[in-house]
Amino acid sequence: MIFESHITVAGVSLPRFKAMCRQADVKPVHIVSDTGSGVEQLMSAHFHHVRSFPQAYAEMEDLCRTFHPAVVRSKLEYIPRPKDVDPPTIFLYEEWHFKFEVAFDYVETLRNLAASVGFHTSINAVRQPQDSETMFVFATTRSRESSESFRDSLFGAETPYWKPINSIHECVVYDSNPGVDRYWFCDCPLKCNN
Image (tube, rainbow, N blue to C red; front, side, top):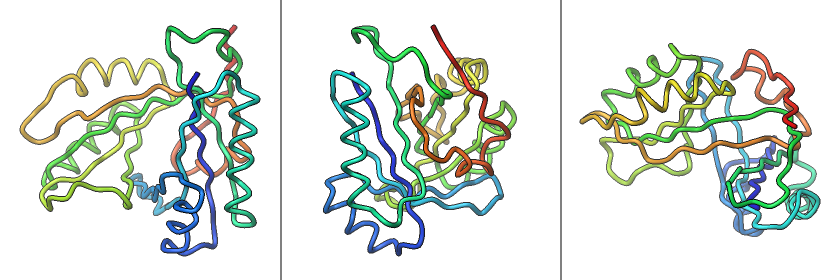
């Protein structure tokens, strides 16, 4: 199975955070929200290829020690795949992320289209394309219906203005502080899929 962990920190400079991520051998992410909240988030990202949720959780907890005492949230997501044996069936909520490379002049257009179907958009300020004419933009929702509509209409259609890069569906199985996302999502419905 594949899990992805995110460890969100506060009170740490970006250079210090990047150094901590190098030490832990995880990817640094600097989320900048486009929802008008001005919210920014420093968090790590790491994939865990394991046999079970407890194993992934233990690995995430080990990573948290690298960032202590700056940790304000730890989050573990299961990435569903058809071949998984005995996957988690209980989770807190789901997220769908769509990544685009967008021409600068059309970033606002994509943001508006995403917002019109219930998505919020953000960027990872740490990792952007090398050319200065495009940027990576992420569109995220917690609604299955919105994700399907978005995928079928917008994500599947490459235009001269943006190019779909990838999409991912995640089932959040642990979140120590869901309130961190309070400015990005209006609610965080609990899910239980059996």
